[in-house]
Image 1 (cartoon, rainbow, N blue to C red):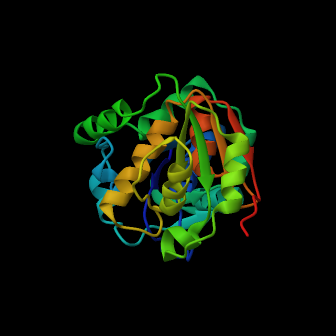
Image 2: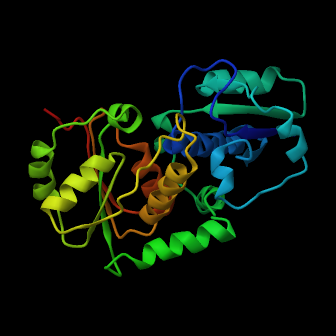
Length: 265
């Protein structure tokens, strides 16, 4: 039986795009589903990715082999290309990253797939303590999430938007137990000046385009805070549900209300 090692990286040998945490998790779940259908072992290895600084270290018998692929991780996108690559590779151990899209959500979670995905997101000891301190600041025992994914332009390029329209949108959907999460720090600051709501005034990162460790750390804090929510409301400027919230909802079986294509003047 072949072993496939799904390696998280910030760049790949033949891929010009970049992948956030939603892409990494969704693709890994998709690879898990393929491993069960086509009978290969699957290991997820994030040792080459900055998130390794915050998550539990997972070693396996081929850990050293993965290190030799630093900066040259092969990328294959889509079910057909992934399966063809696995089939045509003669080696018993295949190291690459397989990307899969939203079709992953068409396969229902099982107890086994849920446990597999949760194992990826276990904090290390130091990060776990910091996470718990952040959670202790939340003023509600049973909290809900209101999340805004406002796009990479402001997150990566610091291009500020006008938020008056979004304040009206926010007020239509706001509940008293909400915590505000967003990829846009300026939006969180703006809302908190106009509404009494709990939020973290820390900048988060797109994990495929940012190597700032403080921002990566807080991205994971907000991700794991999502995993303990009673339910999630997620709004995005994109024509797809935010992978940040969608995957956590899917893995942890948390109800998700979503709206896509929200307008920003």
